[in-house]
Length: 231
Image (tube, rainbow, N blue to C red; front, side, top):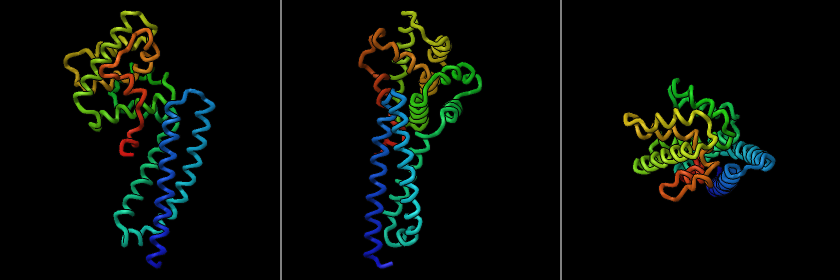
């Protein structure tokens, strides 16, 4: 292929893939923030449409890959990475609730699964996505250790306050409180154990008078999937 023609096709492909990624980021944010089931379905349909576009551009990239890697190796690698990010995002946002539940549970021991499973089964799909992403961010050290410690302390305070006010939380909160307050438990793992109860506590944020501080509330509500961190 003539170099100028290849360069033009590469530029067009870069623009198309970039646009898909930009739209996917927008739809992802809307989907994570949306509570209305009808609007959630609308964004999932849009994501399905982007998946079809991505497959078309992926096929075009595959046709040009050998030449691109020869003449434009860095840009070819960038396109490959972007396509993988898009794949990961789409898989995460469209996978079934049961699959998300199972993916969340693998982060815990069988004993922990025994009391966390009933909690996680009450979470909706978006809450499962957030919980899974939060836990993976902790595992991959994307959250500084200082912030992990601060968030854990806030989780302890939130659970304690909810118990003192006798709020109607799932009974598993008692077990979680005992575990995360144990001096022997690893700080990172303690925070992970507390994550499935967070949505239930935040439902009472007005009664608890949650302040700013570490702001586990904002960390949860503003959470995006780990795949958006570089975009």
